[in-house]
Image 1 (cartoon, rainbow, N blue to C red):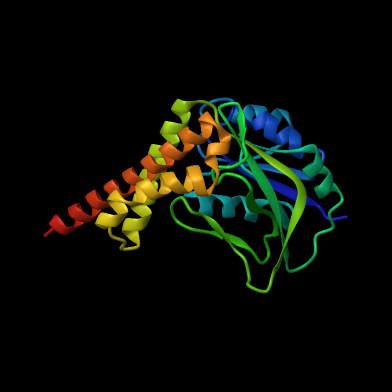
Image 2: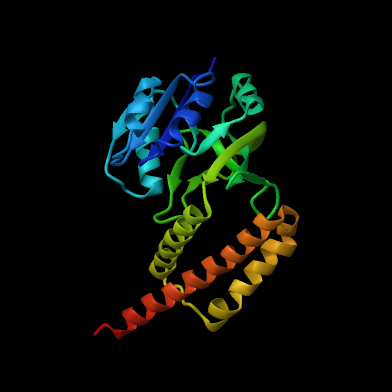
Length: 254
């Protein structure tokens, strides 16, 4: 029977980590926490539940996750975030799984937004590769868009069940994450030499609102769909405004 290691990167996840680990204990042989400077009770809670703790400085999402994958006891990795929980059906799917070579496995994630499950708005379905063999696959990316480097010839199979994502506890929490994401996204685009054109600064936000609310059926999510659509537009607007500032600052340097 294949053994799995669950790898979770953390920093101050005391509100989430117990729920996450408890959903992993029935189906994993190891839960490895890669912690980057938690000052709350994240590590204490994880240790009490039997998780192994690896402490490291923050090196970005991809590099930090790769550190955890390398340190894991098993080759087959379940990569999960601290604010995610395996549903009972997904647990059963993993328990009965005998992973195949040259194959990765997808979870379908559903996000809980301030107490409501979002079933549209471009947030669902939200399919993520979360089980893979570390011998052939690794994370890549420098800023916010970390992705798995998966060989082209690999098969991708979806497991039945839902990965529950308890991402946004409050509207204020959403604002904080949006602003952080906008800053990191602008830095990433700037590093790639991208420009904040007039169209991107002034038309892209409106299109993102329309795309989320209408094309992605955010309107069916009710009030929350309207809020998500509006804030998606804000994110795009701020991202390109910050990128424009970075470009202008770079042009002013002698």
